[in-house]
Amino acid sequence: QVQLVESGGGLVQPGGSVRLSCAASHNLFKVSTMGWYRQAPRKQREMVATITSAGTPTFADSVKGRFTISRDNANNTVALQMNSLKPEDTAVYYCNLHYVGSYNSYRDYWGQGTQVTVSS
Image (tube, rainbow, N blue to C red; front, side, top):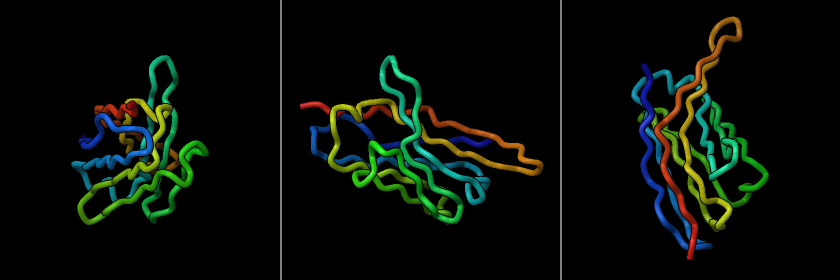
């Protein structure tokens, strides 16, 4: 079983920065795409950023140029650096591990979520 443990988040002022981290308990991490998703109140969960096992990132249009994603395969961790935060970035942020196996089978694992609130 894969466990994902997130840290970081909290209350930050508009224009500020926050760094989220996620640690995976299993070496499945090394061959999986990692991602950060978020869910605001009364909204659906949405992709924020993903990074493949080879290190190729993808970002939602709403965070391009403000957020960066990185991974450390030696320590099974992934981080999301969020800069120039806006009130609309307020949400619960979830770490995701997406593993694609043989015959296109796949498994998804989720962290417990961490709250980020952008407010003055």
